[in-house]
Image 1 (tube, rainbow, N blue to C red):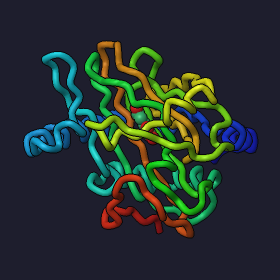
Image 2: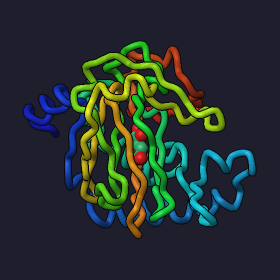
Image 3: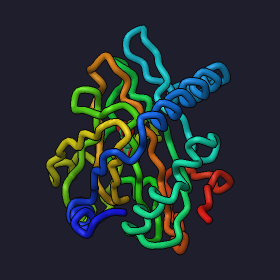
Image 4: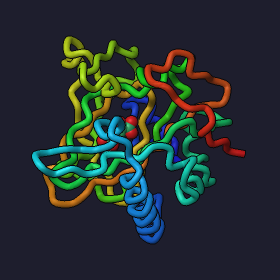
Length: 245
Ligand SMILES: O=C(O)CCC(=O)C(=O)O
């Protein structure tokens, strides 16, 4: 459970770091599963999907992400629906939640590129802005050098701003350049096995991985069950929704 001061910090800044949620053996099992799943996924990846799922730098290519681990992989489903994680989520956005989308971010060493500043609620388009929450779990310790998240403190209290995307990457939505100086972005390093929670409106980004170690993380995106995604910018497949009973 979160303390009152942790909840207060989340409400004021839009994010909260909680170390030591997963044990080292749980982290190791999750990483092992990602390795197996990643190999299978790469073997079957169609050419028209490569731009979205692969990172490329010079001659090097590596897997960037995997979608919906909470639906497809038992180990991640157990984690996303575990009593302690759900209890913390419900303290932050209220009771009755589901996981409507989830992602593994691989951020491979040297090849892993930046994710520009964005707000999850621009992507998700919920009817209630306070009803979405991302639980971002560091599997490798996330540092400034390997590409930890950066947050705009207090941006959860502001509106969802217009986003734009590069012409050749329509899925890579980011806060429009004319708004970018509103918040200063500050790093939020997380030790392996820790969680960084963020509100759906909170501005966040990550930079390139300039280290020689991967920065792997899993993000579970929760929605309070009385809310709906009424104006999503991308498509979210309702058949992969994970209910929590
Ligand atoms: O892990 C990253 O680099 C990006 C994560 C992100 O944007 C999110 O979890 O909403």
